[in-house]
Image (cartoon, rainbow over the protein chains, first blue to last red):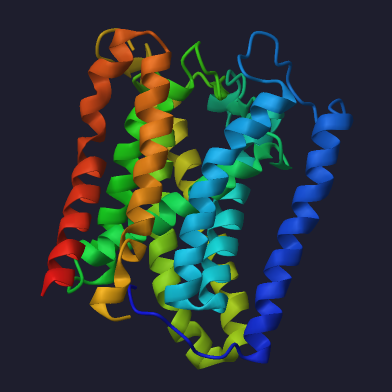
Amino acid sequence: MAEVLEQPLLPAERTAAWLIAAAMAVVLIPSTILHHFFPALMKVPSLAGVPYSTPGWAFALDLIPLAAGAVCFWHARVTLGWYKAMMFLGGSFFFTGLAENVWIYLGKNPQLLAAMSGEFSSVPGTYYFTRGFFWWGDMPATICLAWFFIAYACVYIQDVLLPRCGIWTRAALGGLLALSLDLWLDPVQVSPAWQSWRWVTNESLKVFSIPLTNFAAWFLLIFLFAVAFEKLPRLTARRGVAGGTALFFLLLLGFKAAILASFVAYGIPAMKYVSPPVNLTLWGI
Amino acid sequence: MKDKDRGLFVYLPIIALFGYWLYACVICAFLTLDPRMLKIAFVSLPVVLGMALGALKLARSAGR
């Protein structure tokens, strides 16, 4: 990944890159306007008691992931070229963003969870984000951007440390690095001093008061994205740029559906048999 | 890219992740004023180790 790539951009690659940029703008602009000016339409939860939740603070705190995202995108553009850099950005942005939006939507409409299984009928919700200046649906855009640079850095480190290993081993390392990051990040960010997001779920297995599925999702999202991105050159070689790009996003969609299905399959017996709920905690966290 | 021209460039993804970890985990944990948040810092040792080893390997490959 450290070599500079100076290949000219093919017309189809240019189209794909522009389509991804346009799709990001199409989801970001209306979501941001709706979130700030028509919160009732988006069922935006009350921010009462949430620190640093004014638009000024939200914008200032957004600058940190924005800077990290810009640095990683520049690195990706120089080493991978425009097309692959945009595929990494768009792929991670939509893959993780869609996953989180689905979970938040299910939390806002718990009757949908109850319709999946009677075991979920007592689930009050999932989680929601509090502060953010730019939004995609119910997700702050900088969280999507954070997913991008965390995925990029973890994939980069996995490739530096294990260059001769197969993709499954390297992707597992990338997923574990991201999981390790979130094991501290999540308890800190949901603490009363920050409340960057709020957990509403009554999931029966928790670690540091954070649902176990959250940590599983951190591992799986980075692991599966790393696998999909590795497949991209083969997909474009076989199906052309347009077909390969479409297949790449379909593959990510399939992975997303598989994660959702596996969490539902895990949740049904967990809710039924793990009672009372278990929280693996240290020092009462 | 020639090694001598690489400079900080090859470390950028690691620097970005380290910066975010420093802000979102370390500084935010201090600002909670809750000592328990600092006590659980050890759970992020693997990612810190990964960043350190990655940087070390890149530095060694540049020195060759």
